[in-house]
Image (cartoon, rainbow, N blue to C red; front, side):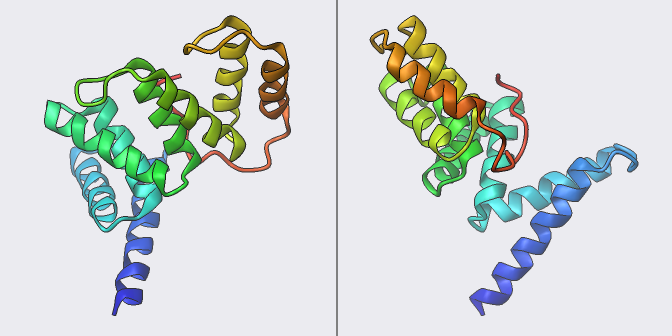
Length: 167
């Protein structure tokens, strides 16, 4: 019965996403708890987009170090599953570091590159800037900077899943 639970998880995720994005619905504590509960259930079921969204929320807004650590783990799990927004968030985690994931510019560059190649314009823009300025322990390289800038300037061909509060 894995397909049924997978279908149910996808439906729960769509509901959580709608609750999260709907502007006309009152932002009551009850609605917020329901939304977060649905995101959590979907993330725990391994839903990649839920891991990305819920993980980022926990990492950014979690009240305890355990929440932030779980959020970072979820983001990295979604990044490894190929979610471009999660890859961008993973790059930010490694660029700036946090308690459980120390600053690692080599990991940040890897995640920015994966996200940029997948069409994440902010990731490509960050790499272009890094190559222009020699950030992230990269040598200044105008050719590489131009490559990443060209990717950043392309028309949007993939919808970025959600805006990042960290950029």
